[in-house]
Image (cartoon, rainbow, N blue to C red; front, side, top):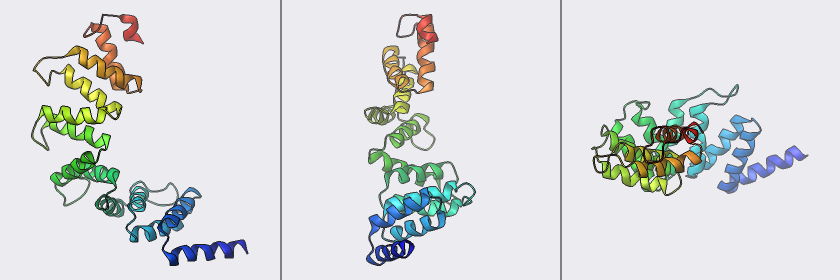
Length: 223
């Protein structure tokens, strides 16, 4: 009886087109290990142009599910692209990175950069940090240190530790005025280090070891 009632409810959700309920059922089935049922509900929601369900489908297909579903990168990218087109910001960034890394056949890296830029424009800190790195490297974009700094600062204002580390490195390498600014480097390294960024912790330790921008302090460096 309970099973019959549950099926009736699910049929009602499907027939009425309640997208939020479809997504919820997809999550419930996914968490209980019923992957195929989960996929079915997410696909129903995706057909209603639900960007969240498209992004979840992308994750499931790209990563697979241990002992239940083998990864299917082609399917995953299809859903990732759909999620990005529907405005899912993290999917924009992820799609861009996959393209830049050459994982999507027949698509030039320039398209990947466009998706990263779109995600950065929409305020995603990780995309802003990646874009800043591109402007530092100058391989996929023109080399522009001022633009790099702008994007690092935008991501850092969201308290994103990787951006804070990159901003510290920016000042340490003298990208702004052609010479290092140790005090600014220490400032940003410290902010990132306090959030557990191991690269920033190491860099800050070395600056204490060498006395760059801070007093030489071996105990602090060791910490």
